[in-house]
Amino acid sequence: MLTELQWSDFERDGFVHLGELLNTEAIAELTQRADDLASGAQVNPQVQLQLDTGGDYEALPEAVSSFKAGTRLYRKIQGLEHDPLYSPLVRHPLFINICARLYGAHAPVSLFRAMIMNKPAGQGTYLPWHQDAGNVWALDRDPLVTIWVALDPASRANGCVEVIPGSHRLGLLSAHGSTLSEEDVHRHCPPERAISLEVKAGHAVLMHNWLIHRSGINPSSQPRRAFTACYMDGRTRSVLTGNHFPMIAGTLSQAPDHYVQHLQTELAAVRHSQNTAQEYAHSLELEVSKLRLALEARPAGLELTGVRHSDSAAQEHVHSLEQDVATLRLALETRPAEAEWNALRHSQAIAEEYAHSLEQEVATLRLALETRPAEAEWNALRHSQATAEEYAHSLEQEVATLRLALETRPAEVEWTALRHSQATAEEYAHSLEQEVATLRLALETPPAGAEVAVVSSAGRFAKLIKRLS
Image (tube, rainbow, N blue to C red; front, side, top):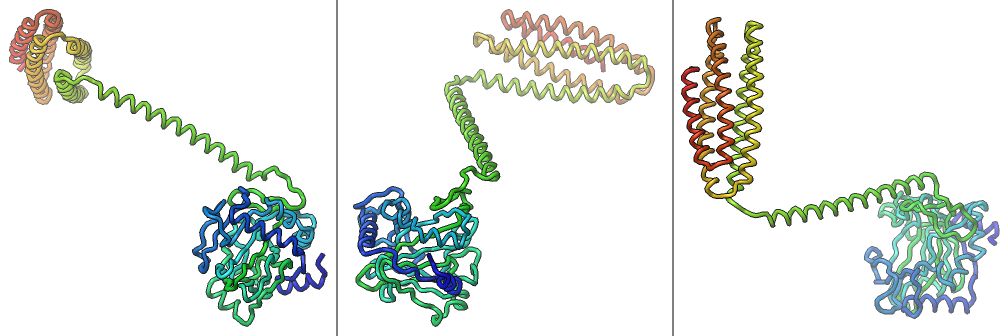
């Protein structure tokens, strides 16, 4: 138990000597265990080790579970709450009593870290002025209690800790915490204010975490080892994980807070979405592989190229016919009489039926193209295609004639002529139906007949064009 005088000293200075805690035998056991962990003679997977490289604090390596080669040139051994020899020291009744005074008797006590700090003989790392708190610790509140126990005598000769008395009352000098800026060092750490904490082996010191302190290198021939532990209010959480820390005294509900439960639920949903996305991506990869294999295995042929070309040409011609239809519809919208509208609607119906028959004929021709068995038929079909192109040209001329007639019709006489042309068109539609029948027969029989029929139709259509014009 600390006396009220000791508590008064602590509140004023930010540190207080606690006196002897370990006898010679306990010191020997603990220092030997530390050296055995560093050398590899004792293995504990829950312990982390950091090598001392000497000199620059910023150049220190990361902590590891074991060194590649056993050494006593270690700087830190952390996780000692999991070691059977150090665990009783971590839970020393005096330390728990100190926490009850500073955090409240109602508060459970947790441990941030328990470790050995070593400055090897003739070496050691220079530790600059700093405070043991701030955002760099990633906690939701600052710890206030650090216990420091000398396992070797600590003196100015071997790089003992130096402190600025009363500096804890300044609070944290930066939100980040840890190492002080040059400006803060110049303002708060003049050499005349610093004192050295010389401590006998086995003796302990209580330090406030906001106390500004540092330590130098160890030029002596003996190591300078010390045990140190940082205790927290047991309700403290890591801001990185939302988790509490190992409990040393008291109890705390293990149920996560509401916001932590919410975060855990969201995390589970994100992981599920990620798994689903990965499965879908894998299925797409399989499908792409199958498609690539199918493309590599497909047969090549000039016939396919010809079919694609013919299909493209047909699509272009259909597009031009659609444009012509749109133009004709616009012309029809401007006609003056209801009787003429009725006649034109009738003609439009006939034209739509004829267009439908043409679509069916195109489908039949495509099927014939896909199933033709011999080269001779291909030659005939190519010839028929040329004839069809001539026929399309004649259609284009007819459309031009119709446009001209629509644009220039001013009088009833022209409408009468148009009605006569409609009758003629109906006769022509009848002849086209016969022509479709002839074409179908040509596809089923030797191609020469089909070619003659198409040529004959083209001649008759040319005569009809002259009559219309």
